[in-house]
Length: 323
Image (cartoon, rainbow, N blue to C red; front, side, top):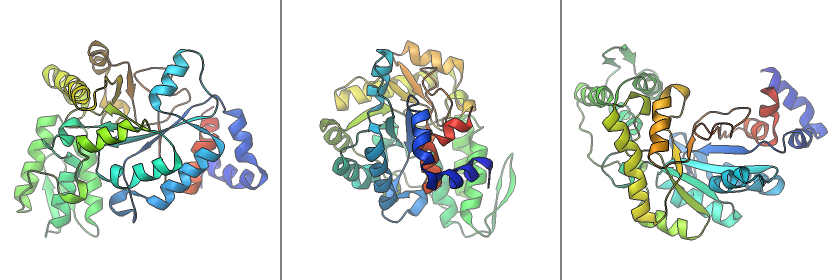
């Protein structure tokens, strides 16, 4: 147990969370979620946990859309104790499970979609690797540049190893790796994503956006690693989502969320292309002391299913530990 966790356990019964909240009242909490379902299957957060987190946010904080937070900050009118809920990718379970809970609790959310995924032109490459490994009947696979990867005892361990390796590959090499993996395990990849990882539809996105509780931002077109793209690929991944969201939702989006979102996944050239293409903000996938300091590196907390992990981020202990 680290020092921060020890402090949490010691001060929580003494009202320490609310003291931390007071000390960090001007620090906006932006949370990053991906998937929610009843069982937590596939690495998702359970509906029960998600609802409990929303109730805690509503009880002690001010939930706002990301665009609302950014506009109020720019105008010098930022609300204290602001919390933003964001979701990445655009899986169907946002509509099936997360949105009904958000609507019941009257809490807004910003969803970043990969428009090629929504258009069913592609399905997300981490899901393709998972599809192949889960169904493979082999004890190990060979990945060029990585070597032998054991499938024992759990194929999920192999998935983590291969997916992490793929993050460092150019887009074409990653696609080639997946094709070669499919041949190696003697399986065919479906052209469309399987039901478990199917995308939202534009109709569902429009329906949710019309409630005013959901805003739609860009998460690229095909969810590549932006820093690994050539100039033409980069421009397409940045501009096409803006066009598709405007056409289907009827709104310009100023918001772009970098796929994977770690420091190695975007560059100054990527940020400049975003500016040129009319975006005003870029969102990353890791936290920071000053989350809004750079409008093209807006920091977020990864949502944790752990009560301790969630409360430390929500009430400000995680932020205080960054001093």
